[in-house]
Length: 319
Image (cartoon, rainbow, N blue to C red; front, side):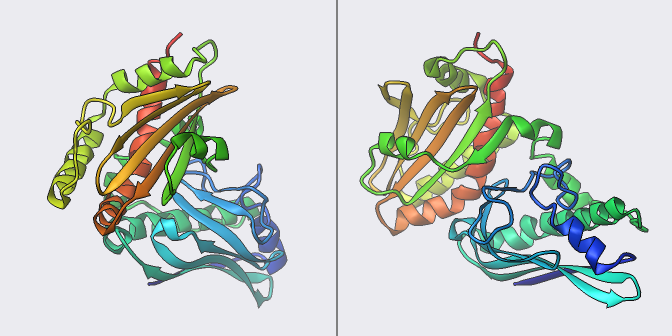
């Protein structure tokens, strides 16, 4: 795949480059974090910095101040490749801002890219270009408009104003250890900001997750997940659409472990309250090709479902 966006900007490359340098900072003037999940990087724009937006993970591989920022996708994203912002000097006080994504899709992304991800990506990049021009006071002359398809896709996503309470973080080593699996083939962690005055007992939050129930779109995705699992010969016990998909296994100090095992793969969900955050880690051990195929299909849905369930638990926060 090769996806290119360009915008002629009526400002010098130096001015546009200065705006580019704000990317993923507290005063970001590039990434449209007000309407999309924010870009978060652990060490800013320096090479080796890791992070991403929503469930899309990547690492900074190159940075030329005011000219280029390049990222390589983590393989778990489903793309082997890179994406990059560049600024080109056109002379006479004008410049070109370009974003290029190129690589090869694998797993579920082979289907998700043409059906959904590409369209969301296109809309996000055009929104970013609008922000850059607005920050420079030179436009945009034509504001990007979301297509009906993008608006439909976003009905399944939480509103941007609701995103700040859940963020993806690196999985702490202690949560991986608590999962107790012999090998880790996949892990991710979402942190829910707990409301002031709410309980800090992890068991209270486990009960809140179980009792919160699922919105209709999550229930539908879980039904699809279960049918895929049945087709592949996986056990779907505990995977109903209206209860927690995992059985409580154990509590280790301040950490609660839930999970489900099958001959093809093992899941663990690890919950822990740290300060004002509820950390929810998913740890997966795939036994064979069937387990890998199943999790490849459900992984993109997993990254939507977990934050949604955390938000629903927060809405009925235990005291």
